[in-house]
Image 1 (cartoon, one colour):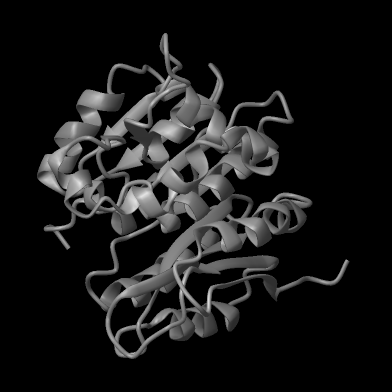
Image 2: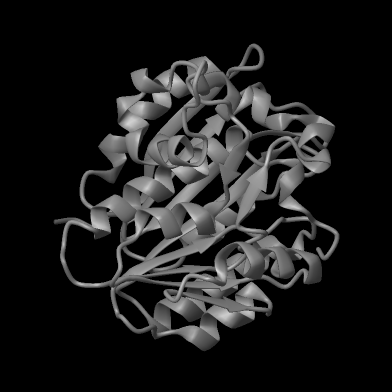
Length: 289
């Protein structure tokens, strides 16, 4: 777990899904003037230089945000997310803005939230938390916690203010992370049942994938309305690679399912890396109204 550095994967297809959904949820929270908080359990470094050695090693962003960048004006259904990236990569004389910087979930939250809102960012990795403090610590609305995100989340609940969003996206390098996620959600819900919880998870090759087991375990719990959105850019194989990812949202804002559907269908076609690319938006659990 402690060897994971998100810069290798910044801006890839999984980030596009995760951050587009995150932005829509934050925009929904902003419809009320009351303040809210965003708690991020595995915050990483906060933001990333796509020209850096780690990002360039695999250049995963090229098949993620890179495929959208030159036609970003056409993706109005993802406008809040893309607007932040445009702010970070402003147009210069002679070009419309080169894609050099990418926001992690903390920077996306920081730029989308308002003066009255707060951020609580957790990161256990020593080097990552140093980057996080350097990138985010100057903002008085931001609290950086050098601690395990699963343990830290429970300790920080219920938060002040009492409205808000929890982002959970562990690296899943250990299979125990899948079980830790379910346990953490159960404990968190008991302490803060009114929060919105957004969980990111990978969809891996058949030898390694544990996402179906995790979803079944979550479905067995009484979490109320639970929405799932998945994007697979290629067919699942028998090996260990990641062919897709998902976002699971507990207590999603009204109409979030329709908002995700609106961008995810064309996004699937745009980010496809081979036969078998597919997406879905469905209710894992829906409380009768």
